[in-house]
Length: 291
Image 1: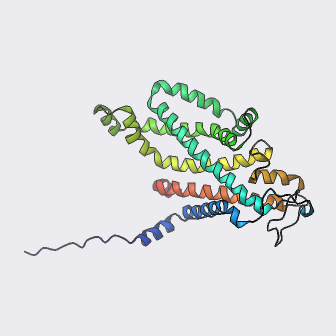
Image 2 (image 1 turned 180 degrees about the vertical axis):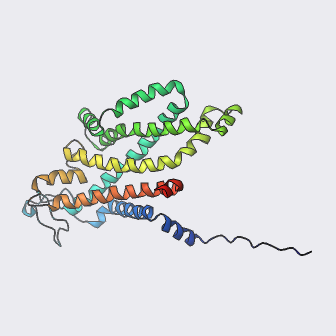
Image 3 (image 1 turned 120 degrees about the horizontal axis):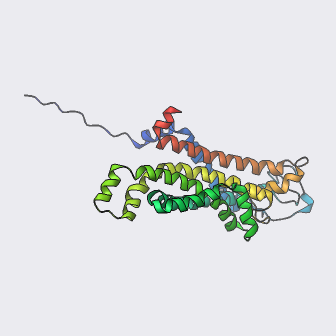
């Protein structure tokens, strides 16, 4: 009697798996590459330009782009190139911090509301009240009552974003808590904190990753809007919104003042949205096939 041996499955090399992932989710990697480039530009701003973004030169007011000033100068003679690079730090920092804080706060409140029925009504009524107020108006009101600064801007953007995360997490927890493995954990005497951390929280990872990217994009835009309206980052701190706000009165004669920070802002938001769409397709292949 002869026995036949089946060939062993040879694992694919890493570069082939990476190439396959790149072919299946190109937008994700394009968005990550753009965000990485923007992060490098923001961190390397002191070395990419030798000009102080606050230096005023009245003799070089509203100069067009040239070899001396790559993006031209503004109404005070400040270099728009230097201010745009330094402004990337503020916008990207706001996007990342707001996404992290909003997601963390939303997960905590959403899990409490979804798992404990007694807290559900109280937490969700507060969230409904916050969502009834437009986010920009709520942020402007907070900025008017608090002292201006980067931290105040982050708080003003986080408060309107938290209810969106809470509603998402609550809906997911209400579904997950009815699953058989949750009932088995409860029957086995597992404590509530362990159930929340070990059995419920890991199942929230995929949708929260996607939600966090959209929050980051929204935060970058909201910061620019607040700065453009004059209630965001202090004027002495370069940010994309501040640069465009200072150049809006000179659009007819010096369009370059708002052109380049606007392009950077648009590219940053586009890259974050590409990452969000790519993560959605990667983490939920069934939804990607339907689309």
